[in-house]
Image (cartoon, rainbow, N blue to C red; front, side, top):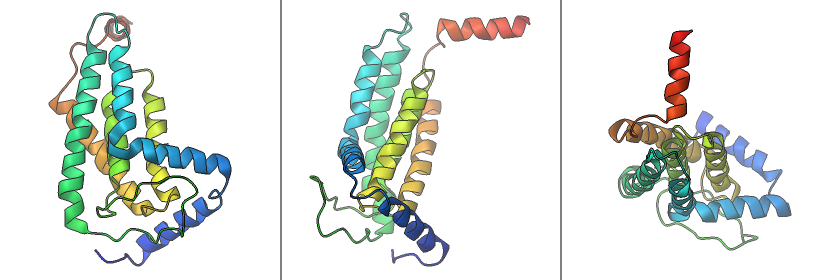
Length: 196
């Protein structure tokens, strides 16, 4: 896939310039390089899935179901994106900086779409169902996804496409592998709403 021109190239350039305002700041380097590293191979999402499985859920088993579903979903998503989708596009990655301020792993696959963004939004959707921590999952997904633009390994359009694809895959995963009965608190609040 050749380098895009027109509105897509302008979008990527504008996003890169916005991140230039942060690059080189110690706190930003640490945050975004750590997020990028934790997103490698879905490590962050597997850790969060294990933590969700360990949380008490009133005996419903939904926490464990959501965790298993998320771990399996990230594995399936990774295979589809890295072995299938990326091979269709072969987009060239951004020109890397002369050196990175912190340790960094250079991927060998196509730039489009961002696998980190895809797995982040897929996992956030799968983990977040009926979980009060859902906003935190999505917040982490945004940080992991945007870290790839920050470290100059993806174009912003790669990340945007990956986020949309990941969210769609997460929704599909929820339909194909629904959690068991809703938690008691949700059933009770629904019943109360119907009575009023």
